[in-house]
Structure formats: structure tokens, C-alpha cells
Image (tube, rainbow, N blue to C red; front, side, top):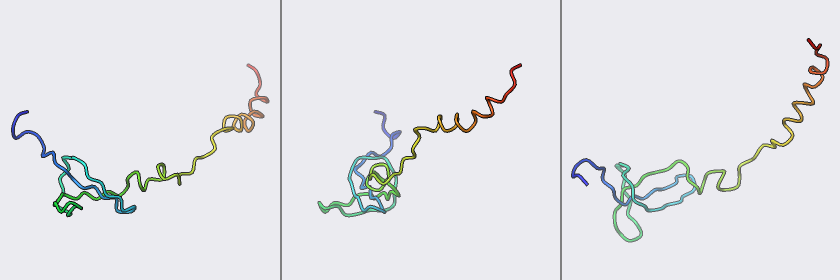
Amino acid sequence: MKKGIHHDYRLVVFQDKSAGLVFLCRSTVKTPQTIVGTDGEEYPLFSLDISSASHPFFTGKIKFMDTTGRVENSNKKYSKFRDTKEPQ
């Protein structure tokens, strides 16, 4: 790799603010905040608004709409308009 053209790839702590989840992984994200890890080392800290620990899809709190029957309901609702239409 060429020197000086790549971002600084280092260990970064990501913290979900709403769920309290904290995980350490490698990233090139730039952040002025730091945190001391469980091993005593100081790592850059990046705060997340949402992660898999707080997202409704992954926590099972998402509400799915019932999409079955929508076509049938539409056909039933508008069938009276199609049936009364004069053939050309």
C-alpha cells in the first residue's frame, strides 16, 4: 500500500446510546472522544443512535402490517365500478 493516502485503520469502541451496548472493532471513523477499555487501554469512542441491540427489527418490537388480502379487498371495493362499466 502507498504511504500517506489511506485512512488510519485502528481499534474503535462503538457505543449504542439508547441500549448501552459497547463493542470494539477496527474502523477508520474519526472521532474526538475517547474511552478507557476494560483492558486499561484508551480507545477512540464513536456513539451510535441505533444498533442491533436497540433497532425494533432486531429486538422483535416491530409491528408488521397485514398485507395479505389487500389485493382482494381492493378488487372487492372497486369491482362494482368495473362491473357497471359499459363495453365499448
